[in-house]
Amino acid sequence: MARPSQYSAEFRSDAIALWRASAGRRTFRDVAADLNVNPETLRTWVRDAHDRPAVSGTSQDTEAELARLRAENARLAKAEKEWQLEREILRRAAAYFAREMK
Image 1 (cartoon, helix red, strand yellow):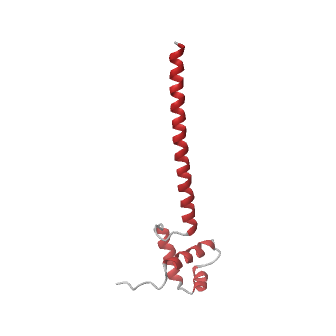
Image 2 (cartoon, rainbow, N blue to C red):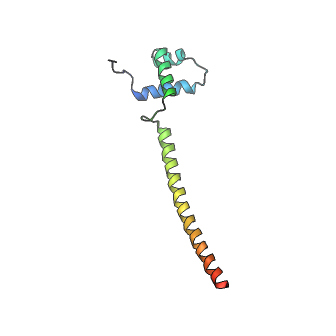
Image 3 (cartoon, rainbow, N blue to C red):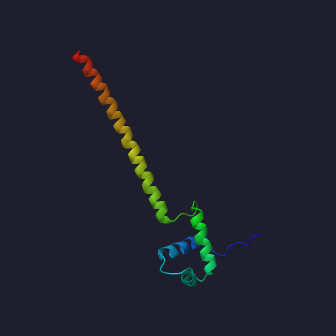
């Protein structure tokens, strides 16, 4: 049975973000030394994060982006309903005037 982790999920995600932000300028060993963790532990966290997209524990930036996209989606859905209504009104008006012209 695996022992419980001494590092929180937030610490892990921050460590992964720090390593990714270095954009290859720093090694696992350098970043791990700054965080006082084993380099292989950091390497495992990064590999696991790459293999499995994060579902829970999303960052605040991701949450903000998700909220923005949901609001935009709602706005676009409302606009689409309005356009469909306008199109239906115009279709009926065109049919009415076509009958009047006969």
